[in-house]
Length: 527
Image 1 (cartoon, rainbow, N blue to C red):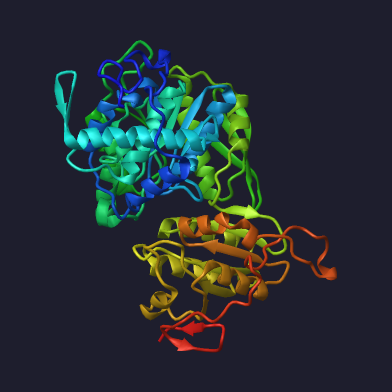
Image 2 (image 1 turned 60 degrees about the vertical axis):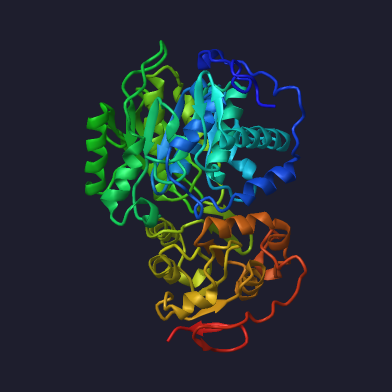
């Protein structure tokens, strides 16, 4: 059963520095890991079923003992780059020796990727147990219950994202973390993560995405992102009263919205790049090397292992946030920043998989992300060297993204992510979203991969882009898609390289088309 009122589901109301985990009641959880995953997925797609608002999550967390208040946190919003900034920050804090929690979304392959303790995914047994705990709490709250003399009742069942957020907060409190790094899910102002009282807030670049939920123009979107800027709660002995807000460079209209919110909330505005001298020492397809000054009063040589100029900006934003943390009770050594940034891993974001041919994975799903990807690819690869496998969700700005990505490649193969929200290749063509570009098509990623492999030369690069769902599909089936492939004698050594689908079949022609059908491999040109 749910713990009695005084225990708040096993978490005593004491300072977050001294929190102690209490075992979960006297009963065993009723779910195993597959059942927990199935239950969470039954709540629906996190974007399609999103219900922005804080009352529901506050009620749920109140019943669970407000675990999010047991530890300090960093809260990171933005359209593009917020996950990368979170990954950089957590890696440095962990390198320094702090016990960290990292909460991000979406996941690529497993739900467990979203909740990490000291860099490690939450174990299956813990995810199942916490799903069971929160599910039972929801049942109580939907019926209505009294806690500490107050009536608590949920107005609706929590969404998938609200459930997983509550589970993350509980897990971090149980494990007595010293600091949480939290990525906002959607927007900011009404996102479930925005119940925390952060030490530092970060706003990564704001651009167009999720306009149906956040607003049609950039200022409206910026207002939603800036909703994470709010007055601090009454301070305890280890808290700064004034919230520090680290902000990357923005479009001027968005920037003014964020500045105005900082003034209204009494927050301290911290531009990410001011008073920071940065010189790029080297840049390769796979990484960049920088010299920065001053960082904690010294000069640092920084290896940024996430490729692209945009990731340089994300790393610098993380460095500035970490400097703020350094002055807010979380001392850091310059070497920890240096080593922590260099150790950061963030899959699916311009991820380079060596081989013959080479593979690059990127979830670029909005115009700004596509531009960042295109800038980096153009700097190192000519279109004649690239084959693009493109898939997208249908609610994205496909014409704008495709128009940026398709000129990068000599061949374009349309496919679809494994999602109910996916755009069918034939619909992309029928709607004229390819801008008249000749494309090939395969509905299944495995078949698109087989076609790309057959068209590629050993020295080529296969670019898989357009959706994190598509990237997740690729990473979910590595044995089917990437395994050693014989390399012609003239091509050099035998590196691991992408290969055919798991059954080694010759892919059948995709059914249907939306334009002129030129041959059996579904080469389409929109009319």
